[in-house]
Amino acid sequence: MPLLSFRNLPFFHPPRAFSSMTTKARLRGVVFDMDGTLTVPVIDFPSMYKAVLGDEGYLKIKSNSPSGIDILHHIESWSSEKQKRAYQIITDFEKQGMDRLQIMPGAAKLCGFLDSRNIRRGIITRNVKEAVDLFHNRFGIIFSPALSREFRPYKPDPAPLLHICSNWGLQPHEVMMIGDSLKDDVACGKRAGAFTCLLDETGRYDSPEYENVEFKPDYKVSSLLQVHSLLENNFNLNP
Ligand SMILES: [Mg+2]
Image (cartoon, rainbow, N blue to C red; front, side):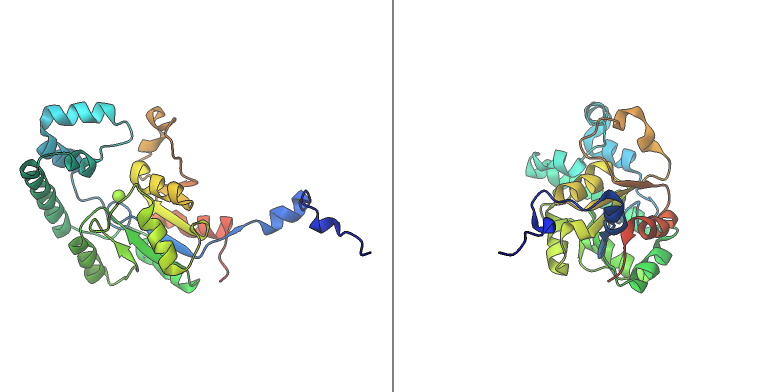
């Protein structure tokens, strides 16, 4: 009768020192938010919200939404006439933003690094496809898949991220979502089972009001320039 190998027993766990050397997760793909993450924030969101919701409505919704306003969600229950007007206002603000579009410092270099390691990159944005096309054309760095607002349901639903993972043939735990929104990007990433990195340029998420949010990021950076070393230190980047 063969001797039972202790390694086959269900309760066997490798010794701690051994496991710490081998448990760096493999990272095979990074999905970016676009506005405020790959591009410098150019949309004046408070003004846009006020224009859509009215001053009073804006203040009321703002006080009930500590992690940020989900404007598309609020509009969805409106009458079609009211909705149409709201979408027009949003489109106008987004168009103004497109004219002033700039790439985020560190974004191009980070993409070059990801390419050098054969790590895939995609985009999930709540902005329109036209804005993604403009970004691709203006900066010449292509992300694929790049899912825009036309893909439903959008962030913070995990569906767009799960769609990208299956398109890449990767598991969510091999992918990181990077974005500047706790309520959209981090929530989408965590719900999908991916790693998440919050880009918080100003430290606004250090405020106590964000202490008890449901989804917390695995990592936080104040610049995309920090992501390169974060990935090298915490992940197995070998193909
Ligand atoms: Mg953003």
